[in-house]
Length: 142
Image 1 (cartoon, rainbow, N blue to C red):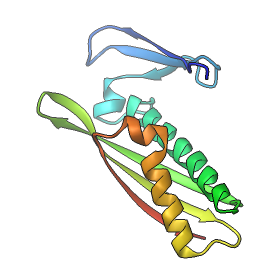
Image 2 (spheres, rainbow, N blue to C red; image 1 turned 90 degrees about the vertical axis):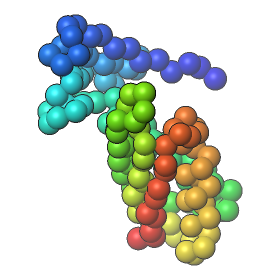
Image 3 (cartoon, one colour; image 1 turned 60 degrees about the vertical axis):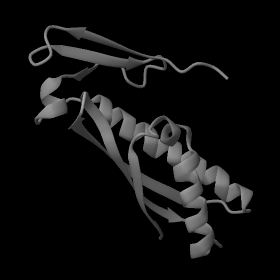
Image 4 (tube, helix red, strand yellow; image 1 turned 45 degrees about the vertical axis):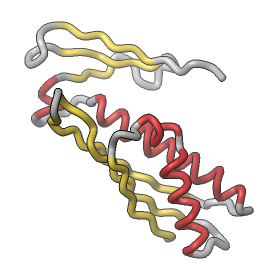
């Protein structure tokens, strides 16, 4: 499997400096990020926002795979992820991630969906990277 690459550039000190983040594919190219957006209120992206987006997309793909193992195909899976950055002993950490999932899956019953959603939450690679964080989820069939 190929390595997936991203890059970041930073100038200045922590509170007044600024940076840009890019992906190898160019989907993100020189997107700004800074202290204000991360810890106060700014319009730029943050590492936590990028992790939340990565987790939402990884979860959705994992759920699709697990549903397929049950002979089901989703018409849609809509996942929102919220990553919470908090100060902890020794610095800062993402302490919680909450997944909010709504899916339309013809032929799925509530039990099969719940089992598949929980398996996706536990098994997607981004969940595994975030093993130190509490991962919660609200999942419902549309």
